[in-house]
Image (tube, rainbow, N blue to C red; front, side):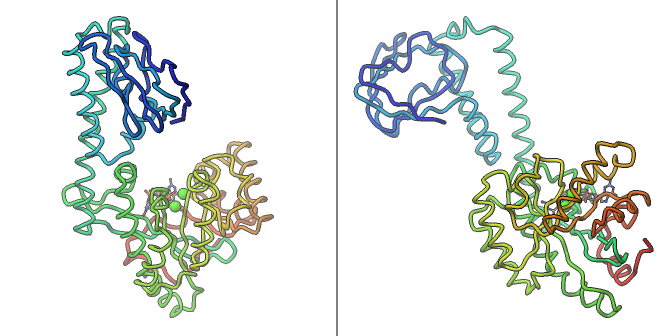
Length: 401
Ligand code: C2E
Ligand code: CA
Ligand code: CA
């Protein structure tokens, strides 16, 4: 979206021109004249729109628009409308999609199909094919959203906990809480089957709230058990989606949930991804500092997979970073990958940030991370994500490293 100043008498739409954007009048008046059917003209003022057919379909304008006075227009492109529409709630998207299509067929009936004549046929058929595919996907999203809403209401989610050990002493330092969906028909589903859809439909927000509360509830009993066995205290690490960060009063919500569950926030880590930092850097910085003020620790997850993050890391109050498991899997066979791991570990040490190595499946990987002086390790070699009852079995045990 951008703004365009238009001088009195200037033409904005010309007859026969291809359109791909709509105009919202912010200031001034525009005269729009239908050159084909009615031949009528009308005035469009502040808050009104014209040229909207340019975003509904790729076709030629049958109207002419001229500024009656100096005006200011907001120009909205077809691409922006499509992006906003697909990011909206599935029901809203479906309505928009449907009405756009209604408009298309009405115009075709009104003006005749020659409106498209100079559009190449392949382009047109591709467009209508895409519309059908989009709609089928929207219906699917809509159904999934309903199913996820029901799952939240019926509390069909469960948490598994994957141990994170200290690479210095081998003891359990904490657990990552990982959500599963105990689906009434399909059994226990891994996040792989539903997290993307939950993100897309924004259902990750209520699911994330449930995960947060549930994970916090276990912090005190885990620590009691660890203390009884003479083991050091343990943290619980919770994944927070970028969508949760977009909720306007997110900090207040974390504060309320922490109070409600009476959790010791210093034993809770929040795992965020680089996308949270990149979206609006200064906004993210403010929120992260407020979250730190509540006592939580912050962990940067999947480190190394996103943007070239090394430059901005020092700007954020990050306590730990997790080297993504893709590096762990390749570093023994791939020199570049090993160099990246070395560089990340070195940088983290210089910035006083602790390192968690993810996805450790082999002894050699564990040894290498220990030699690089990374503080924590997590992976199938140590333990898979465990159901709650198994957590109590391993609390207090020590791995020989
Ligand atoms: P993640 O945050 O990177 O979580 C670690 C994932 O790696 C887990 O998969 C875990 O089972 C898997 N993993 C652990 N050790 C190993 C290993 O040695 N080898 C391999 N190949 N994989 C290992 P899981 O539980 O399927 O979770 C997948 C992703 O789903 C998570 O990736 C996270 O992005 C997302 N997720 C899980 N729970 C939540 C949640 O509560 N909220 C949000 N927003 N996302 C979640
Ligand atoms: Ca994680
Ligand atoms: Ca990760």
